[in-house]
Structures are given as structure tokens and as C-alpha cells.
Amino acid sequence: MFYLLDIIGTMAFALSGALTAMNKRLDPFGVFIIAFVTAVGGGTLRDTLIGRTPVGWMRDLNYVYFIIAGYFLAIIFRKKLDRLRTSLFLFDTIGLGVFTLIGLEKGLDTNLHPIICIALGTMTACFGGVTRDILCNEIPVIFRREIYATICIVGGILFFILKHWNLDNDILYVITSCVMISLRLLAVKFKWYLPALKQN
Amino acid sequence: MFYLLDIIGTMAFALSGALTAMNKRLDPFGVFIIAFVTAVGGGTLRDTLIGRTPVGWMRDLNYVYFIIAGYFLAIIFRKKLDRLRTSLFLFDTIGLGVFTLIGLEKGLDTNLHPIICIALGTMTACFGGVTRDILCNEIPVIFRREIYATICIVGGILFFILKHWNLDNDILYVITSCVMISLRLLAVKFKWYLPALKQN
Amino acid sequence: MFYLLDIIGTMAFALSGALTAMNKRLDPFGVFIIAFVTAVGGGTLRDTLIGRTPVGWMRDLNYVYFIIAGYFLAIIFRKKLDRLRTSLFLFDTIGLGVFTLIGLEKGLDTNLHPIICIALGTMTACFGGVTRDILCNEIPVIFRREIYATICIVGGILFFILKHWNLDNDILYVITSCVMISLRLLAVKFKWYLPALKQN
Image 1 (cartoon, rainbow over the protein chains, first blue to last red):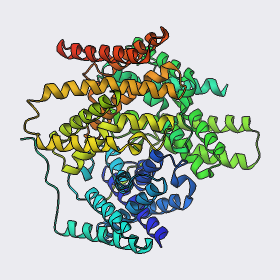
Image 2 (image 1 turned 135 degrees about the vertical axis):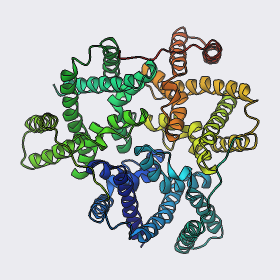
Image 3 (image 1 turned 180 degrees about the vertical axis):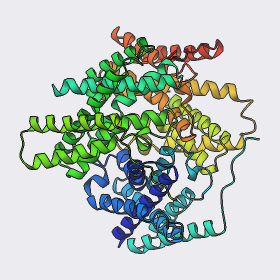
Image 4 (image 1 turned 90 degrees about the vertical axis):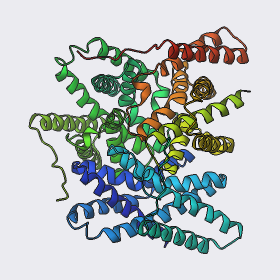
């Protein structure tokens, strides 16, 4: 179940990467690389920094296959994706929740402090999109407009509060990811955003 | 022989990095860093992701010396490099072939799946140039115009087909790299390129 | 003493990252990430490349706390920081000296060649600022204008010359960092800079 959601999230991230790259008029190879990096970038950075090498996607080819599938879906349906934007957004939000949980878990496995685990969760969910934007020569969108990373941090804090109460792991996962997904949906629906910090 | 070609490729990549950086009017230190990163960036990313640390160039100083040599060559001959563009292009193409083979070999050494090995080969050959372009604040050129990475992927597939036939390793290397080098020369001569993917 | 200077340098780097990000009108999360990356980016790259994982800041939370403190200081005093620019510059320069020494030491611990150690020292001191500029979509400032990395390289060479004379480690550290700090102050006061390399 968790693994399935992970795969769905990976594919959704690959689709979002492919769409951004096509908007920049890149060639098919460039689109593929950006789809790939968006999908695995966060987990790759996390694994590299904690020393779990070879990194995750090198050890489980399913990720690679589903990214390739996402890439071809994006190309085939590229003229109709505007109409599918809502489903895409939903998958992307599932990815946000699942990726954060995976990062938290990997941090716990490595016996790191909760604060570092939250950083790893946020990194797993956000860094793919950050790399996508850097490769496309943009200031990363999550630094400017969207409440996105903030949700990962809130989710991470909630996770450790619930864990403190000795909740069962499965319930813990379900509650944390549902809260994160709801927060994202509410944030987008009601256009919550963080104000820019101005110097004067 | 292989080692010699590797060194030539490294120097050619350093030269190409230095040239790009000088076009951006960077200072001598910036030019050096970009030459260095262009030359070792691909191998460094590969080694980091598969966990071969300290990364390659830290363990064999010859790379460092030849990059420094390439840097000074680029500075001394910077006004004449336009005339040497053909030789430079040839060295760069040799680098493309050799770096891909090295990436494939490192992947096999780490017992990774052929698909991942091909990804590592492509990464070794391409990521240096990608970093060069990011540091110079450009969308990487290989995502936009050149058939470059596609040749690495074709070379990688050919490598595993030939390997399947139990060819001798040396013959395998020679055939694969000759095919890749010829493809690149043909691609540039006849201006083959991948069309941009448009959304509408 | 050394540890204290390291913490001061980290905080100063976090402040400089936060200031750059606020100038780009990023949201509070974006400002935090850029403060964080500026402060730990150099050490993180160094640790990743030599294989000391999990990387440093994951194992010593004090860095995280002081970065958070630096971030809030930058936000609270953001309208008065222009007046504090001199103290900030001083802290940043201390960071430059201390970070270079830490990189040199880590390289020696890993039994790497002096040239590689100097590269690691320079990387530790400079890469945080480079990442800050890339995330803010600029060509890194140290590639263009400031004599900064050159000072790290000079400091590294001096370090190994003094080490060759069997100086006591503490004296070695004090001399090297004082020379580097003085060079930086002189460079900024007298506007020393490296000329851009032009192709014609």
C-alpha cells in the first residue's frame, strides 16, 4: 500500500517535471532528464547525505520503469494535460505526503535526531522540484510562492508528536499523510501563502 | 591506452569549460573552477551516487595536473582557439566516448543492472557540461540542441548487446567507442537534432 | 576556541544567505533554506565527496540551532543590517578562515594529498556561497568579482609550508587564519580584484 503510493507519487513528480520542461521547449532527452530528476532528486540527495549508497533508484528498477511510463504519458497526452490538471495535482499532493514520510523513516533508521529527520523528510519531498527549477533556470517555485515545504515541516512535527504517544506505525502514517494532504488542498483552494520578506 | 584517452578527454572537457567561462567574462579563479567542474563533474556525481568515496580525482592526482594544464592552455591560446575548434571538438568527442565506457564499467563493478549502468555512463559523459551551464546561469545546452546524451544511451545499449555475445572486452570497448564517436561526428556534420516537444 | 569560531562563521554565513534571499523577495521558508544551505553547503559537499556520511550538521545539532538563531536575527534586524554591515563582514571573514582550516584538516584526516586538501579547504569556505547564488539564479559572485577563493588557496599553501617546518598545530592555525583574514580585509579595503579573462 505504502509502496504503491510511493510509486504513484514518483510518477506524478515525473509528469510534473516533464510538463515544466516541455514548457521550456526542451528536446525529448532534456524533458526525460528533468522528469527523472524531479522524481528521484529528493530521495537521491537524502540517500547521498546519509550515506545509503548506491542510492535508492539504483537498487529498485520499478522506480525507473514508472518514471519512463510517466514520461511517455506526459508526451502522449501533452495536449490534454490541461484538462487532467486536477488529477495531476492530486497525485502530486499524494507524492508530497508519501515522500515526507519516507524521508522521516529513513532518518529514524539511521538513528538521527528528530529535527534532522524532519529536514530529511522535507528534502525528500521538495528537492526534486528545486532541481527541476534550477535546471530550467528559474528561482525554485517553492521558495517564492507555494506553501509546500511548510506543510512537510508541519507533517514532520505532527509525526513525532504522535510517535511520542506510542501510536501504531500504520495509524501514524495514515494520520500524518492525511493531515498533510488536506493542508495542501486547503492551502491551494484558499490561496494561503507566506508573505515575502522585504528589507524595507 | 584507455587511461591515456581518459586523460585526453578530461583535458578536452577542461578546455571546453574554460572557454565557456571566458565567454561569460569570469575572473581567472571562476574560469578555473568551471574548467575543473566540467572535467570531473560527471565522474564525481557518479562516484558519489554509487558510494565510491573519496571520489576518483581525489585518489589520482594526474587528473588534477592535466586539468591545470588544460586551463593554462586555454588561457594562453585563448585568442587562437577559434582556429583550433576542430581539434577541440575531436578531443571532446573522444571524451564523450571514453567517459561513457568508464561509467558503464563502474556500474558493472558495483553489480548494478544494465539500465542503471547506462544511466551512469550517460551521467559520466554529460553531467560535467550540465554543471558548467548551470554555474554559468544557462539552461544546459544538451537539453536544448545537441544530440549528445542520446549518443551515450545508444552506446550503452550497444555495449550490452555486444557483451551478451561474449565479445572480448578490448574489442567491445573499441567498437562501442568508435560507433559513438562516428555518430557524434555524423550528427554534427549533418545537423541531426531532436525536435523540441511543444505543448501546443 | 576553534569550535566557537566555527559556530560564529556558520552563523555569519547563515546571515549572509538570509540577506541575499530577502533581497530576492523570497518567502520565509525560501529565506531559511538559503540561509541553511549557505551555512552548511561547503561542509556538506566536502563530507559527501570524501564519504564522511551522515554529513557533519546531521551529527551535531549545534550547527542547526545557530543557523536558526542567525535566521531569526536576520529577520528581526533586517531593517538595521545595513548599519551592521561591518560586523557582518568581519564575521564572514572569520568564517572564511575557519572553514578553510576545517576543510584542510578533514582532508588530512582522510590521508589525501596536500593539493586535494587545499581543494577541500577552498570548497568548504566557498561552496555555500556558490549554492546560495545558484539558488537565487545568479552567476556565483566569487566567480566574478571578489578575491575570495584565491585567499583560501593562498591560505592552504601557507598551511602546508608551515606544516613542513613542524610548527605546533595551534600556532599553525592561528598564523594561517590571521594571514587569510588580513588578506581579505586588505583586498576589500584596497579593492583588489582579479581581471576578467577576455577572449578578444
